[in-house]
Image (cartoon, rainbow over all chains, first blue to last red; front, side, top):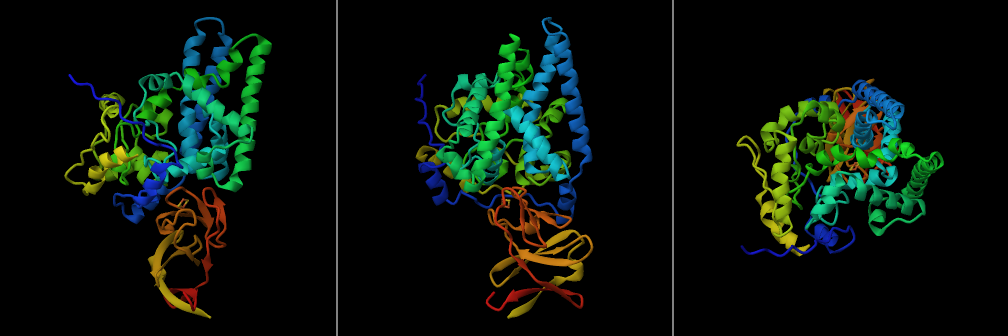
Length: 366
Length: 107
Ligand code: FES
């Protein structure tokens, strides 16, 4: 058997040759494919309500308080473990979907409620609430366009160990904390300055300082008490409870085509159990979310039912998504331009084929 | 001098909704507020030039369909990131059963 060499690392920076090439090829801020939905129906789907998010947030906070109380009460015995397992996922994973949906402003109808939950969730997920708002806007403008999208999870060729370590958050929390520390010191990278407007930078610095101060206070409390309990409650869940966030996050785009302007090609909708869908706030309908970011999480199942004739079949489970993604990611380590091609049902409007044929060339150019 | 251009019929827009109107190579958005009054702005978002007519009208705000930035369509004020630049507004009048938008002679 001949072993292929690893592909050359693509340039994923936002200021390098890939960025220039994406602009030249018309991939930056391009017009993306949308399934057809009558305006009247879309208007109805986009309607904002406070009810569903108030209910979910009350359950979320209630469970956080109860599981934390159980963990504290049984601290020092094995009985505390299940409480922290629940608390960890609610803090270290559910924060991501709350951050995301409230960042879009679609969770609640009342704007200040979106803002409050957004800031709390940003703290939990250890993201600068200002800079990530802008990076996520870019992710929606240029989804998985190399040189443009700052939120590409798999940068080819991707390392196996770092991806495994994601599930216990060690690398990620350290990387996130370094960014917060750097921002708190008033330093922003060229990439950050590429997507954050100048006038927002002081806000980004202030937010980073607040986050660092609270995380720092938890560390001081742990030292002072001679116990890791404060860190089990603040910051720590981002390590021991983030596995669900990565499990669902990696399959959003993993293994699919880069540099295409059709979300049906580069995003994955995965059917999931109701608990995961609640933790993830329905972001498993990922193609639908990217096509129509105005539709709140609670309306995504209805949107999915409406346009699924125009989308590749959804993966029937998280397991099935990993089973197709992992071999593809491994192959992408050695084969430039390889991607998983989504199959459309006969009822769908066709892809623009040139996207598929040009992807390998672009991969080797990057 | 203001030139009044017919944009749409009164019944073409439901209350609390928006309609795209293209004229002279430019795109405009015509709004009807919940009380039934009409307003007009530039049709493209000041963030990334996406058609606002695909967005959602809530009260006196329009939310852009791309990144959920918001404007007050009555004043043009940019209200929610990622929009930072205000939207240009235009006068509107109702003539019979038609809605007209007032454009400067050069437009
Ligand atoms: S294009 Fe309108 S908010 Fe970005």
